[in-house]
Image (cartoon, rainbow, N blue to C red):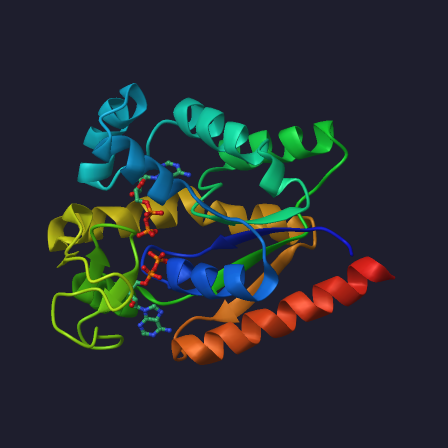
Length: 224
Ligand code: ADP
Ligand code: ADP
């Protein structure tokens, strides 16, 4: 079986986490979210968490050296040796270069970058209605994906909260940061022929079908 080293990217609120959770189930690949890893560090008050918090609260990117070290270490774990789905990394050209270098150092490469494309207006609607389970980070939406009981996670009964960085003033900055620092990655992966675009405005199940079709094609191409 050829290995699938996938990057999921797109603006904040595009549905990366929602899709990654489904793909992890469907393809048995580890789902590595730098946002989740950072929130874990903040919660546990680690040194990294203390350094990252101020950037996250403002909707700014955490400095590249911290992220590259954290993600690089995670990718060396055994479960990531036969493939992975990265969510939220790389987010700058410098991070993309570091990832390419780490992978090529061990004879591996990125298989494809999947861009979940959603316009700014939808992003704002999605982020302002997003609710997250305090325990395991499952995402809901007050309108598009409401839990069975308001304010309670369907999967583990924990409380649902609004993330601090999903407040309107921070959302605006996160979008700006995305356009300025992360969008240049589209060209980076386009040049390598690795970019696949997905219309993220469709309902989550349709987005999932599209991504699965793209991955099935990639598998066939890798087999040839
Ligand atoms: P979203 O899912 O809304 O796109 P994330 O959960 O991925 O957001 O990230 C939350 C915050 O964590 C970001 O706003 C940023 O401060 C920080 N972060 C996550 N991944 C990275 C990264 N690769 N580089 C720099 N900062 C990051
Ligand atoms: P990201 O990880 O890219 O920041 P999430 O997966 O957390 O995005 O999704 C952001 C919000 O939008 C969540 O509240 C989620 O329930 C909702 N959402 C995700 N995908 C869709 C979709 N296709 N249509 C409508 N809402 C969606």
